[in-house]
Image (cartoon, rainbow, N blue to C red):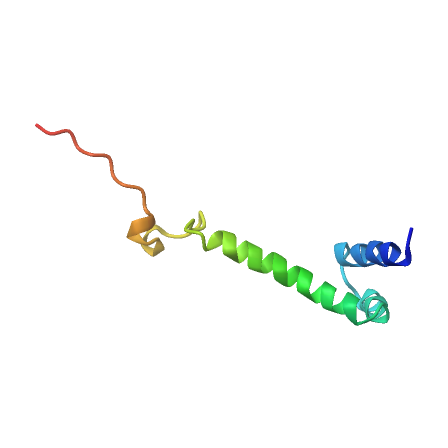
Length: 81
């Protein structure tokens, strides 16, 4: 394994576990790139989650009054007499 792969594996282990002060200091000791990567990873996941929600699908817990009319399904047509 190269040094870069070892650092990547260590960084992944730090990010998957809960981050405490000792792990944060170890991450800082890895250098600027590791810290930037560690900060941007959760930000990217959050942006992805917000993007999925913003694609027109309201959350299931949203009250019907807060869902725009153009996102609601059409009513069934009534039978004519």
